[in-house]
Amino acid sequence: MDAAVQAITYRCGHEEFLEWSAMTSREDLYRAAEIFPCPGCCRLSANESQLDTQVFVNMQQLSEGMSALVVEVTQVCVLLEELLALMGYVRREGSLDELHPGGAPRDEQHAVWRKEFWFAAATSPFQVIALLDLVKDEARWLSNYLPEPNAVHYLGFPVLD
Ligand SMILES: [Zn+2]
Image (cartoon, rainbow, N blue to C red):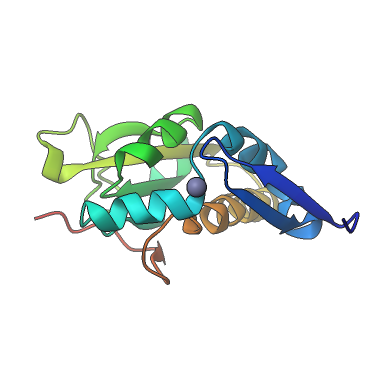
């Protein structure tokens, strides 16, 4: 095998071969995901359950001095839920906008899986952009698990009604 290619063997037994360059910034995600079913099995499961999983990436003000880049994932199949929970995602109501993050979910239909990447209001733009790159890499990794292409949305919010 080419040294630039890394093999990942998932719990379902499926193997994936990834360009090392594609993994380097967020190897933690790819390695942690090995103990779960592969992206292909998750996409199949979502399709069978007629779930159209979508990812929304936003910026929100969460308190007086703190903001966050926020990732919200809608219509998640059971196979992907475990993985998201391990990666620090929690169940919340879908956010309304930049100033109204979702609280406890009132029901299944309005629930999303949410992860926050916090930064202080005084953080330099360069550091915020570095954080954004980290989040974009995470969204790119996550997109492997989505049944439809182009299901990652920046600066949009889930419409759950
Ligand atoms: Zn698989």
